[in-house]
Image 1 (cartoon, helix red, strand yellow):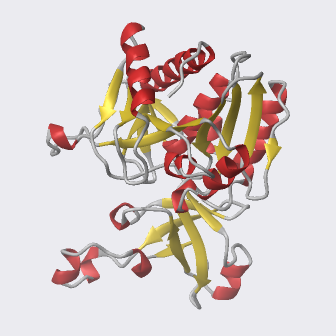
Image 2 (cartoon, rainbow, N blue to C red):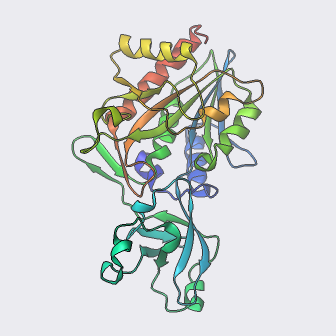
Image 3 (spheres, rainbow, N blue to C red):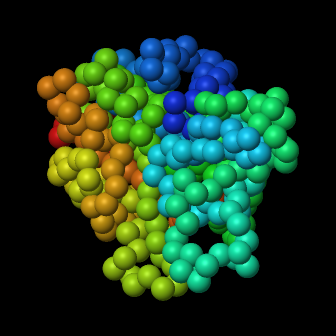
Length: 339
């Protein structure tokens, strides 16, 4: 399974089944017997004795859900996860298991009052057009509760970049699969493919409670704003700058010892690395850090431009930097490193 397949699967928070099925199938091909818990997390345990290390990436993506079907056949929806209203207009989507195509629309600019043209159109003023002429016709294709994903084709562009939906956090899931290709003997490694991160780190909270790790690492697709019009101090991360390490975010403060070890390993082995230069946002490290009696954590991320939108960009080199750095870190733990 490659990132193309992973990112193309639908997996809005609370409806990660297709991603889960694909991951379980791939993990079994690799010789593992993954466990799925009540909430839907996929957990793989490998290694021997030694400290319990939980490495987490979340399966879910931001998206939408059908909340009503109007008399005229248009579909009302609600956002699932943090999506900027400005990126919704005119986007193509797929609705439900049958992947019914639709487009998010609003009245044409010609029909808008001058003040309307100057305002951001809120999501609740938008509807999805599936070509139905009535509620009865629409209900033959979609229903209330159907999840909605963005219709975005995975492509490789430029010399090194990937364009896709759901890179937050299918890049992390791809990294975990790479870690599981290695043999681990002196640590008890738990790779967790978590659910519902985008709506409150729910899956990681449940998984970490079960595992009670000695240390945890969240592997995430993170903010990158290295764009025209953004001052360099606003970039947070830079595409192609390597693995991004967090100093602090909205939910967790990483272990200083773990952070220093990650930096040492990167510098001594020529692995590109950068700091995530903002405390905005958060990830599953927050849930792992507070599980049971708590544990030290770190966040290692892949920079993604246009995050939480219908399409984002990531660098293949950055993904490889994260893989290499995490393998070295886990080997360091096998060698005796403790936070």
